[in-house]
Each structure stands twice: as C-alpha cells, then as structure tokens.
Image 1 (cartoon, rainbow, N blue to C red):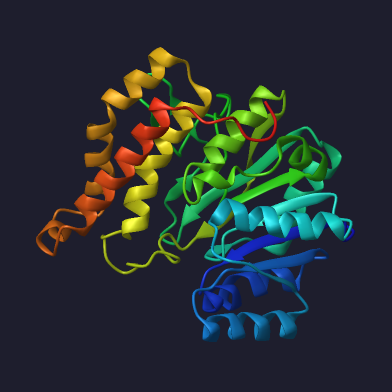
Image 2 (cartoon, rainbow, N blue to C red):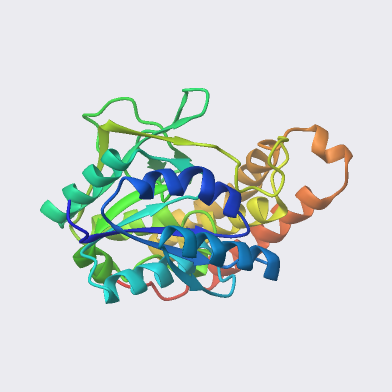
Amino acid sequence: MAARGAVVVVNHGASDLLEAHLARTAAGLDALVVVVDNSPSEAARARARELAGEHGWVLVETANDGFGAGVNAGAEEALERGARALLVVNPDLDVAAADAAALLDQVLDEPGVLVAPVVQREDGSTWFSGGSLDPATGRTRSTQPDPAVAVDWLSGACLAVSAEAWRALGGFDPRFFLYWEDVDLSWRARAAGLRLAVRRDVVATHAVGGTQEHAGSRRKSDLYYAQNCRNRLLFAALHLDARTRRRWALRAPGYARAVLLRGGRRQLLEGPGPVLAVTRGTFAGLRAIARPPARHGGP
C-alpha cells in the first residue's frame, strides 16, 4: 500500500498507550500517522509532542471537544495532506501493520464500504465482531458471530473509511462527545447507501478500559455513565420517528440501571457519583428527545 492512507488516533493523556500500541503499528506501515492530542495537562501534551517528533507523526493539538471532534480534526489534516483513506484507531488497540494495510487497501479499492476488523480482548475473547441495534428497545450488541448477518454498526475503536465516504458523511457528529458516535456514523452511512463490513480475517486486540479513568477496577468514569445514557437518546432524537423515540424514552431508566451496573454494585458504596452521572446523562438525553436537533452531515 502506498502512503495514500492515514492512521488517525485521538490521544487524551495516554502517551504510554501510543508508545505501546501505535508505535508498533506505524513502524511497519507505509501510511501517514496523525495524532490528535487533547490531553488535559501541559506535561501530557509535551510528552505527545516528544513522541510525535521521535516517530515522525503529524501532531494536531486541540481542545478536548470529544472523541468524534478529535477524529474529525485528524481526518481533516490527513485529507489536506492527500490521504485517500482513513483508519481510525484507539490508542489502546493493537493492530498489526499488515492488517492495518489490508483495511486501508479495501476502502481504497471499494470507496463505498466502511470496514472494521474483529476486535478481541487481551484474554482472547471477542469484544467486537459486528454491531447490532434493536430499534424497539434501543439496546446494542457488539458481537455478531454469523458472518452472513448484516451488521448495523461498526466500532470506532478500529474503523477504515475512504476519503470519499468520509466527506459525504461529514465525519463524526461532534455532539456525541464520547460513545454512540460510531453507531450514528454507521446509521448515516447505511442511509447514504454505503455498506458496512467486518473483516473476519483481520483481528485487532483491544486493551479494554485502557483509556478509562478507572481502569483496573470495574467502576467506569462518570463521563462513561453520563455519555452512554445521554447519547442513546440523542441518537433516537436524530434518527427515529416520534413513536419510537417515546418508547426509548420510557425505557431510559432501565437502560441507565444497566449502564450503571457495568461498573458493579460495590461502587455504589463509595459515593453517589455514578448514580448522579447516569441521572444527569438521562435527563440531558430526554431534553434532546423533547426537542430533536438537526441532523449532522449526510442523510
């Protein structure tokens, strides 16, 4: 593969992960590497600059406007430099250079396809193999063992897209900030007549929770709780009919409870933070349901 492709990574104070994962991928890949750094401290930003200089990566420094906005900034830089395909990769994800090249090559050959690999956890279990969305309940699943079944969404943890498709879609919707932005992008891609594909022959490894504030324990960050609850309802407000939006809204308390319990029950003994976060996120999402915003980008 010629350097017509670009790898885009958003870094939020996780330069150790870039060094552990991205550096290995980039070393064997003939592609532009764009790191978007929205780290919270000057020390973390300085380390990102140092790494970018050592490895020859393009560094784009931004405010912390969320994952989607960060990817958009990196994609814009890559496209301005002539990239015809983008591979979005999480900083805590390992993908072999040859596999990254295969994903980029596919979207270069088939610009109307968005492609993701199978993603495993470090213990070898499957974390993503094709996303599904139940429109009746608003619940998602990230594993689809049957390759014959069409997928509803692709994970933004590792996602290849052509420049042509990216421009048509307008990139990620930055209003999602974190979580559900990949479901939204996939939904809009399908509405635009693009195809979603999972490469079963390409496997990446995700150090799940590596970028989470509370990595090492079951408790998630308050941002995780709030954004998951909010963005499910934001998605409904943007894409679903009024009757389905109401159904999702009625199911919001049950969804919030399920999201909360992903962090275990023990966390509830340590303070009200998680409960307040899911409550805050749910009410923010309900406000979007009440007054649906305009859609982003393409269809």
